[in-house]
Length: 333
Image (tube, rainbow, N blue to C red; front, side):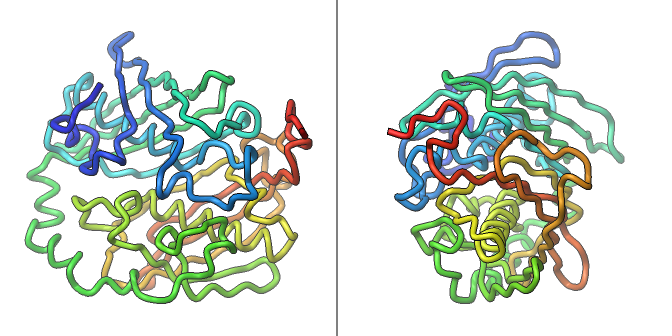
């Protein structure tokens, strides 16, 4: 099991945010990893009480476990520079089993079967892709693919000088400013887990300002000098939940993420405002999204703009379950 001294290999410094427990090598590019799914966590299990068993495992927690397994094994097995930095370039997540295998409210063990591929990047950079197949004792959840760029520390320091990095985080952080949207509108109970403010919606199109609570270690690790991709994915989820509720009456307490497909183009700076834009679309006309057999599947395009430039963009897929009786294999009692 990784210990506190191993945390730089996973890119997490706060112990409560470390979920990876084991890594076992199978071949030179295949390995098995284990992670713990906590029964209680201030961010990952913060959801409305009415959700009950339909809340299940947080899809972003699954993606975070995959994200932790990648850097650890990349440095240990692919012999990447120990103090280099991993930058997420794209990710896909497909969870066809989220409503059946994912219906656990207590602690659970997540098993990850990972295949890693590495290839040269520009200069001394390396590009690595991880495909993670995820199962829990109740069955298979789905799979994720993360494509990352690994930069040696000296190259990263050239792009992001340490003094500049510290200044970027201490310039007042406008993205943290603003009153958060009411937590229940985005499936939350705690305001410090809400990452949206100034939300507006009209005819299936929404926009909002990003707010990242820098004191929330699940959303902003103290070692970061930019807004992490996971915080952007949370914003995409929250704006999608808000839109689904206002447009179709799909209440956040009965709705969960079934899939993501996102690309991250550039650093999102923590001291400059970010606008989040969303539009709903008919997934049936755009090819099969993840878990097409899931009930009430709804899809959204989401874009993050900063300084007039698109910093990240992609798609979010939600599935809605009105009650446990509608979950395949669910128990209405």
